[in-house]
Length: 114
Image (cartoon, rainbow, N blue to C red; front, side, top):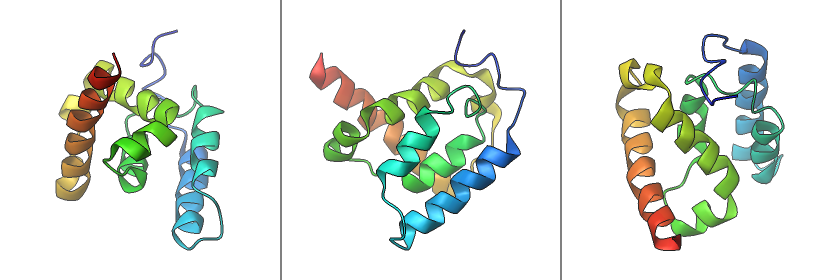
């Protein structure tokens, strides 16, 4: 199944759950890896490009972060590269900059590991 086969279905319940988890991580009530675990255990449900908004809030553009969260980063990177809807989405200034930086730096990270 390709990454973007389920892009027309936006799972609002999963999005709410991830947003709540993001807030709990930000306030130190939950651990960072719990976000990764929830995304990776729900790949089928999290393929809609709207989930990139939450990822933009979580991601840190550094090799250390990429190494610690490689599978999740790769999941979102694949969505960015293969989903046609992403090109037409307006992420706003902050998320757009963060996702653009992530894309460039994650490509560098991947090529340095090849």
